[in-house]
Image (cartoon, rainbow, N blue to C red; front, side, top):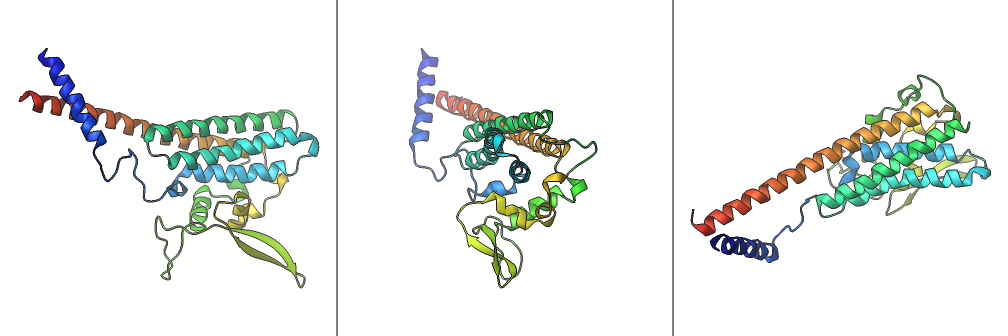
Length: 253
């Protein structure tokens, strides 16, 4: 009887605590919902999608279904990382990262089928580095494109500006890149931020390069998921300790 009374008091205490106003009621805290730009899997996924679009743009119209499918899957990898990051709880974040992992698996399967169907060539030993693409450098350029620069020339973490899309126009026989302000990331424009990607030709793209990017993105996603799962475990343990402490206090131990 006494134990049931104590349990009821503990539940009441936790209920009151959860209903009381608190400065932060979410299990995740971030200075900006755009903080995902600091995540390596997000940067790798952007490069993957840029190369996927470059590849599918060269396909004949008869492959429109395949083109739409792999383009959508590559976009979904990025979109779910972004949406998941903005979710208020770690559990929701993990759910969206799971969606991202599923879409990445879909991209991998499509790349494998493209090779089997003769749409994508295979060159043993080919890699992103062989094309002059450094993934760390790419990530830095990507971050620099959305982090505003003060007069001193150094970026401020969490201070974001609009990404600019570029279009080429001929003006007096000169090719220009004219910025177009946008409230959202426009992925095809990323190629103008990084010359090695801008100069890529579809003939440079191989099965091995796509698989390399898919595998590296997958590895970083799995490490991110692992760290978030560990956080959930720590939160659960803390909750159990707090529950025990409150129970002991009510009992007068």
